[in-house]
Image: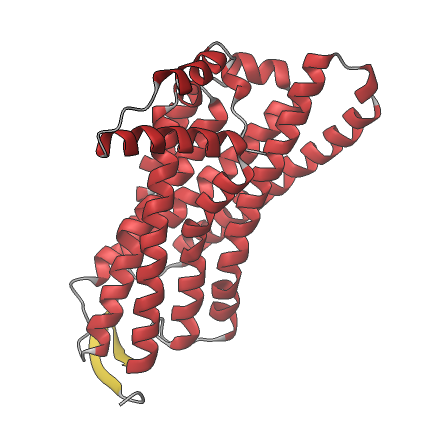
Length: 326
């Protein structure tokens, strides 16, 4: 029974694709993706609620960037991972699932494109915050970040559409994809090289800085490390798929491709862990909101004096006070 392999065929993109997937592998992939989707929905939803319910986070540039990443990760957990699990379930049952295939491809490519570009934008934002702090504070406002993120979410539709419509590959489209990936890598690496040299230079004159400058510099440096960790985790999760694509020319729905895809999608589940475990303020605010929620649900009054002072203490802080690092 556990060696059952179902085969069928379907025509996609002008070529016939064999629909085959072993029962045991199918159950394993479905279970893992369902678990990752469940954890990702909870984690990213909590991250977004924490950001939205905390006024000083809503007024922070860095928090808006984190919120955009959490939104794309939530999209992945809500649509991509469940669609993949359902699609594999259909294949195990001996069908190809042609009706679900466009939904899976579009949601997957869209969330992936949006995530990569947002991570690239976060690298540039951190670079400007450290290398040009005065200019960054004046020009990079929450409104500007919101506009940039909206543009990114709209622009991500264009590379996702050709994949969904099963347009035949061309040298132009392939070149555009490769050029886009290379550009993202160049921007991210250049941004963090600039941050590294700036931090190295600033560390030599750290003793001559004022207390406010020291605190601001240290906070930006810690936040840059956290953003680097998020970016590093994202690309590490997707490395197995990149390697698999290069060494194996088999159909997408084989064991050599599905598990690397599942590992790549795991990055959407991993990011909330990074937010909360490295962000002391994130944890404090989450506990605060959960206490209020539990208090309402159980009809037990949460004493206002336990909540109000914390909010009042932080309400007048500058928007740059957001710190995702512990």
